[in-house]
Image (cartoon, rainbow, N blue to C red; front, side, top):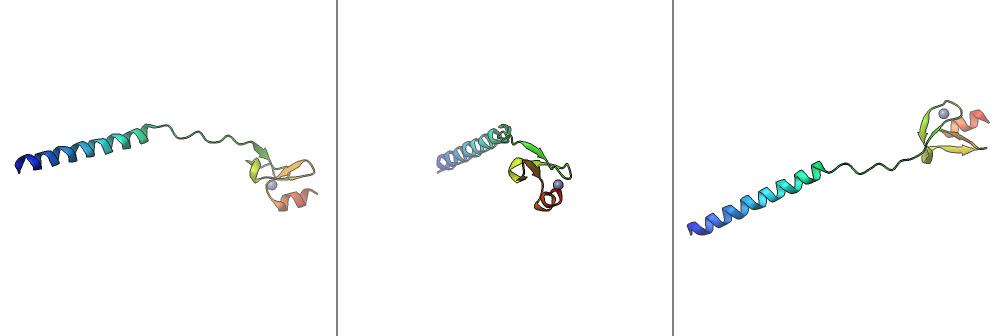
Length: 72
Ligand SMILES: [Zn+2]
């Protein structure tokens, strides 16, 4: 019986160490590279924003619909 408890304890310790090791691997891994997105400038107020969030009008880019209207 004593041997069984010993075996369980060894397995538990090994499992704990493995989990700790896997966690440390995840922490050391560099963060995934951010997808580089073009930054564009609002033609009205000059604020910089990602191209996907900008509004294109007459070949100009704006940060919001309001600014695209003001520039028209
Ligand atoms: Zn703007």
